[in-house]
Image 1 (spheres, rainbow, N blue to C red):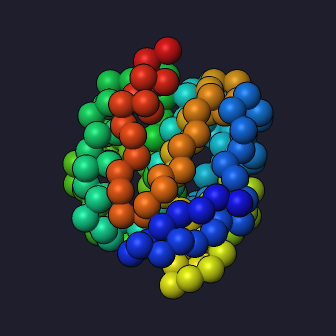
Image 2 (image 1 turned 90 degrees about the vertical axis):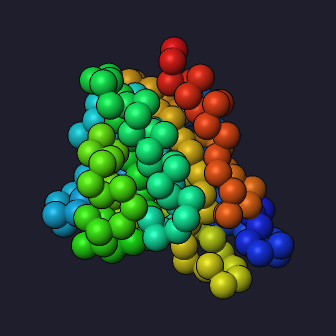
Length: 167
């Protein structure tokens, strides 16, 4: 399990992010229109999973805007923001009007995603939510990068993520 912090206290996730070099676990998440999203929908593209508990936090605009600007003109890659939020909130929260190159998804119908990716928080006040993480999957469905953010109030290391996406 991974250890993350929230307000100075340590909490555990249900496991670790999948290893670099391994096939990405399948996923079924929910779009804002309540349709299903599967990893196979993005076959042949690099997929960046930007995972965190809610879009309704101050860190969200920076994260979404950075990835929106990076992916705005790329046809070979996609950003999937995965949160615990209900799909209905996606249109109203965080960059809804400007981040059209970032696809927001909910794990509302299926917590299997959080368990399979090892990001389900197991204890403390955030139990049942997801730890802030980044996973990059290549065109063949293999994980090429992973990062769990140690403190839920912090941003991921964007320079590392963007370097991986250049290749």
